[in-house]
Length: 564
Image (cartoon, rainbow, N blue to C red; front, top):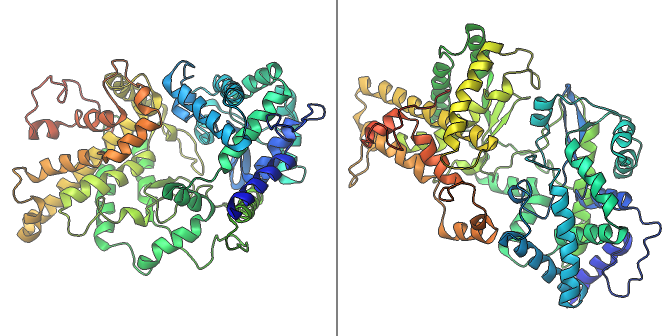
């Protein structure tokens, strides 16, 4: 009962302090004097909510010794893959979102179902319209957008004049000071659409949208998954330190460092390919040699938020943690001398991050456990799982985005090498069409995964070649598994494919979130997973030989795609 009262008080204060919500019964809400920009800025400053305007802080593209503001697309109710595709309003996924919003509004505001449905319809309609200006942009893909479109920083006043949106007032209110630094605006199409949408919507609809989004973002859900995700969001360093503590005194296993070196040697061999000009080969190999492997380290209390939490008062603690987190993040704008990355890697994560500025790969401790890694595994399994993930991160340092000047990189790839790369990329783009609709992200991912498999397999063969002359039969005997009639190289490909399998409960979660109703393939019989397994393996000649795939079959096409 006390918790429910605290929640109601929190929600009531949230509405009162942020312009109110016309949908609240008896609110007597007045549109006169309502300033949506001021409300959006307060919600961003106090709760980190990117509503209608997206604001990020990251490296200044022109000078990585400082950070810069990026005005990009905001967060959305619709999942990104649905928003970017301009989901049809008759689609079952759209109806599910509308139904969820209706149920939430009924629960929060104690209003009739038809009233809640009317408000939910307006909220989703407004966002659906905004999605029309987002295209394929992601919330935080500023660096790629700058690379492809060569944006330059401008003063906030200039951006305000161009889009008739007072970005100057919005940013100043968030930072509680005037910001004189020029900023990047990396989603011009979206802000043109925002301007058009606001001209056709009344203040009441905008206010309902903003407050629905705020209430939904801060809603408490009584599930273990929600609790974990909110703790990771608000206390990432504390959780990371707890996760790493049992193994923080250990160094990276020697076997893992050898794996990384083998992968680096293998990729270096790929960088000697004839399609790279000699000068580009030298630049690439020097860059590869500088690429070091690191992992999250924690000093006691480093990164922790200085707040006094109260027992049995979730909502007060939430308010304190969100405000402390936002204060810390906003202070990043004023960091100098090679600021830290905007997305620090925590020990419990499973992503490997390529840091172009620091020139290293970050490996989380979570990957140093089954199924990705186990010292008892044969090397075929290790190279196929953790090895391919490391190799993919290495290959990202040499994708198309890196033919040109990038953060801290003054050496350019030559134009002829870049032209050849793009020609080879076209081969992968055509292969994507056999699995999914035309998709630049899928093409880039297929290139990276194919390179990772090639590099990891060659590294594994190099490892075998080192052992065989030394007659290390004890280790070689671990490369096959008893009771399975597969060679060690066949096990390599099986392990690569198996790491893409999902438990049944995760497949059900995808269906519940709308993936089952959104078909990526024109033939509606393929998926991302099939692309990342079959699409990658079909380009590998050794796979076709190992499993006796007929020449010209789907898994052994005449024309195979290759970059690395």
